[in-house]
Amino acid sequence: MIILKWPLRTAKSPYVPIIASSCHIQSLITSGYHLRHVSQKSDTTESNPDAHSSVLQEAPKAYGKDVSEYTPKPLDRPIGLLDPPKPGENTGIDFRTWKQRRDDFVDYDKHLVRRRQLKMKMATPYFREWSNMRFSKGKSFLAPLRLFRADKALYFPNFFGKTLIKDKKLRDTTPILNNKISIVGAFSSAWGENQAASFISKDKNPDLHEIIASAKDLAQIVQINFEDNALKAMIIKLFMWNQRQKLGSENWDKYFLVEKGLTMELRDMIGLLNSKVGYIYLLDRECKIRWAGCGFCEDYEREGLLKGVRKLIDDTNRP
Image (spheres, one colour):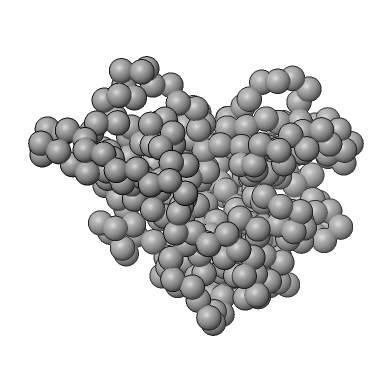
């Protein structure tokens, strides 16, 4: 690997040395929407360590210190974002002009933010997530014993990707999730998809599908397949016809293939700590995360999910 070092003139200091590997220089130059705005907001993880669940802080992650022993615990605090999701967020598309890119490149504060992001990526062992699967088959946490309160719950972010609808248009997840009680399955591997299916598939949880059918248009199941590898994403697209047959045309708009926008910060906020594991989120009509689970479903978690869905439906129907 080639290491380059050159001085960068800034407003704060005549020259600031920047050290970057050749494989990350282009990433530094073309950092997207997130970099333009992240420096304007405080870093929740660092400035307010109590903002996140202590269970997630102790759970094995793809970066940081390796864990030799870990026993999953129930979520003790709400997970998610402070602000409601909006269409157009987390698209992974860089809309900046060349002038804006140049201004961001010589902005020292934004450089520090990006350097911290690159440091985190470079410090991530390639097989760390696979090795973390030895803890309860990758289960990062146990589902909470009850729903998070509506006034305390946090928001599920917007994502942007391709659905099963037969066109080339990319769509946001938020319009689908708004005003619906949604059970969202998130995964990025066949193993994770099987784990998510243990919560939401008709074979493993037929009662859930009966509740959704009886609720008519109030509740739905949404699946999000995260795949940042271009070659794997292309293979998934080639076999989308198979997913269309399995889900039926009425559910084509509820399956998303998301290739960009899932940053390490978002993963930490929503508890998606291992990309090889399947995660389940129960959202209310405001896109707030009221319940979450991961890994293979335990019996009490299945019952908790059913109770949570019934409770949200009853609250919606209550005059």
